[in-house]
Image (cartoon, rainbow, N blue to C red; front, top):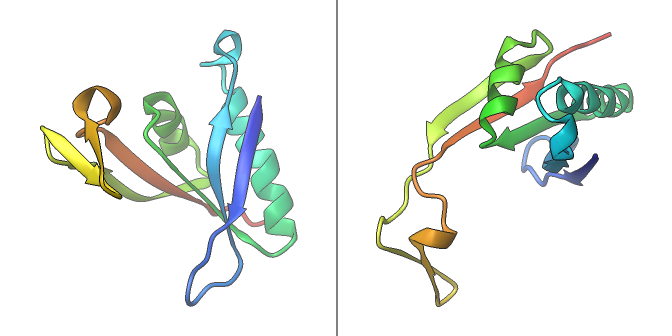
Length: 113
């Protein structure tokens, strides 16, 4: 398992860290390791004075974080795009490689110890 975290540029809050990638091997998915791993990393950043957040479209992770009292749901929406094609920097992206209308949730780590 691994996690990628970046410093998120924000005009008002200069101390935000954001998860960009969380990978759990398939054999270990669904038993809560991802959320435990996220909490350990979030606690480390909280101790250092940073805010910590994640935006995800993984249904299992959204469900697990919603049940967890340490995470606050900030936004929950459906990603919307043109159903036929998308243009990104002059490159056509077709439906088979673009996840259209998937649900996206953003969470903020709120535990303060």
